[in-house]
Image (cartoon, rainbow, N blue to C red; front, side, top):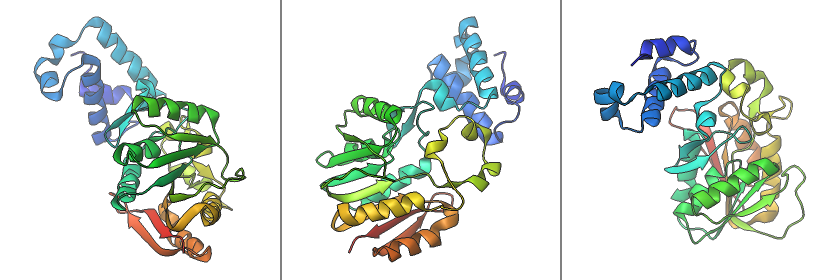
Length: 277
C-alpha cells in the first residue's frame, strides 16, 4: 500500500495524536475498501485500486485543513445508530451517549423534550429505546432541524420537532416528564485550548457562550422547566466540567432538588440531573 501509516501521519501534519492517527488511518481504509480489520491486514494491498487510492488522497487533503472525518463522510454513529451530520450540526460525542444512558436509567416516561437538539442524536436515541414515549425536539436552527428530521426518518423514530429559541420561547401549555439538553457551554476563553477541527468547522452557535454569562442557557432552561415539567419531573444537562458547582447552585436557587452531578468516562464532571418540586 503506497500510503503507509507513517506516511499518513506525516501527511496530516500531526493534527492528531498517535492513537487518533492510527485509528483514523485504519477506519478510513476499512471504509474505502469496504472490509473489516482482519481482511484489511491480510488483503489490503490486493483490494486497493488506483481509484480508491486517489480517493484516499482526497480525504487526506481535506483532513489537512482540519475538516473532521465525520463531515467528510457525512455521517457518524451515536448510541449504536447512524446519524447524518454536516457543519450545520455538532458532531455527536461519546460523553453525550452517557447522558442518554443516564436518562434511560430512570426507566419509563411518557413525554420528553430535547432542547437544542442539533442532529437529533439525543431525542432519536431515546425514542429508539422508549418507543411508547412522546419525544419532542427543539432547536432555533432551521438547518439543524432539517438534518434532525432526516435522521428521525433514517432511524424510524417519529419525533415532534419544534423550531424555537429557549432564550425567548413561544408560549406553550405542553408539559414533559423529562427535559434534557446539551446546550452551548464552552467559554470564549477556552478556545485557545481547542482543536482547530472544532473551531474552524463546527457551528459556534451550538458551542460557545460569553464568559460573562456562562450559565445563560442553563438558567433559561431551568426557568422553562418550572412551567413545563410535570410534578417531580426531571431535568438533565450536559455541563461544562469547570462549572459543575456553579450549575448545581443555580439549579437549587431555582427550586430544584435532588441535584446530582455525574462524571464522564474521562473523570470530568460532565452531567447533572435534578428534580422539580
